[in-house]
Length: 272
Image (cartoon, rainbow, N blue to C red; front, side, top):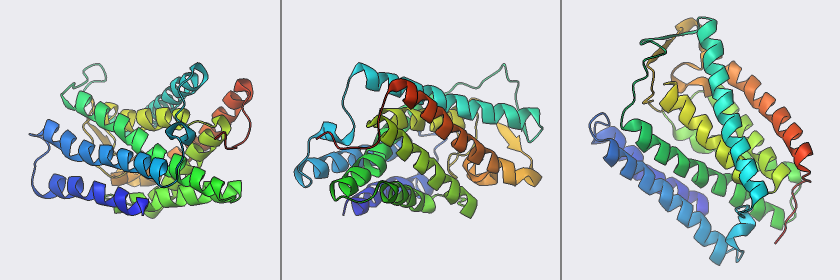
């Protein structure tokens, strides 16, 4: 049922964005359309968890404490650093080129509106795909690996509605879903995957100008990618459709593992 709510909340923004408004002239309206659906999805997840699952909101992994805030900061850093390294590698190897100087970024209102939007998206998707799905399945005594696989699979299929979608793109979306699940498992908290999700999307689209899962970017930089290098760059779907991102997702698993060992966390287990 909750999956239906998530889809329904996303449809108005998708339709209005494509059919009515030119986003180049209506950045705040675009934020309201897309952001309104995202906020609605957040509240639907929380309300169903609270009143149908009959669990405390913090049981989703939203407890506020100093350790979880360190997880959040680490997630922000890892997501932003990963996308920055992807950009640098593609630039240095000639797989992409800048239309303007690296020292002349094009700041616009989108730098703010999409920051707000991607913060909301990070919370919405992690609360639902990691928090709600994994905790509900865990409460029903499913195996940990089934929690991982189902969460990642549903996450990937949900992005199948995106424009310019590719099979390899959906595979990478599923893999990054596994990374987010592992972050959730390793810390027993949503804060690390939320942080990573926010900066991964924001740096991808609104800093470096890549398409974000097939959607149009509004970046500080305008870029062109080599059409012959789609295997690396992901083409019109963006880096998530390319092999380079696969490597960084795997690297993210190792980075999370190293961090969690120093953090002293255990495996996924209900605290509530």
